[in-house]
Length: 316
Image: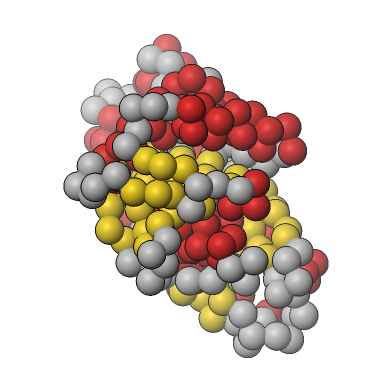
């Protein structure tokens, strides 16, 4: 029996699964963030180690034959080399009740978009449209070619994301208050949700309280709900978000796939679960251009995708 570790290290949490060669998950652990870009390598290593400890604590000491780490913030060759240093720290850690049996080919380091794709579909060919606080569309074809669109962060990109929807909603509310935009219910719903006396108090909330990206992104459901209730301005914001995500997905399809071939697009992230039927709007627009594709929700979690990639390395 061979055992592998699949690790999903994101900006808010790290999930590790212990998987056997029958694709059965026999252990699972969770810890804090593991995006070394934002928290540093030492803190990322601690999160990964804690998640591994949790995943293996109910099992006797075992031999790990492969490991896959899919981490947020890992997209360039120098990022991969930094994470290899983290793997070295794991192997040298004598407190982990693990015997490592790793060859270079059995250590996989990749961006979290790839493991979301593999976990979401169940194999490594297709497209993932990951849209939560941020956004990225990532694809991989039969030949192993990959294409990434977006994922450039809240300042440079993340079109269609919860953050961009929330910001667009607040901007629209203030434009309406100024008289530059159509009348919108967003003024009142933001006031009620944030307990504001006046919509002008958004300035104090966003700037003086120092709200970060995640806290602002958490306001996206307000815009989504207003759209669901028929607010024209809010629906325009949702339509813009869908349009950007369709454009990104179409770019991936045209770049690395035969546009007439059948493939699956897995949609992951909080934005797709809104009340404004954003998922239905996206699916309809995609099928209008590419009627042979299938848009799905994830079959498995990203950590499971990391486990599958780790097992795949043993078969090479």
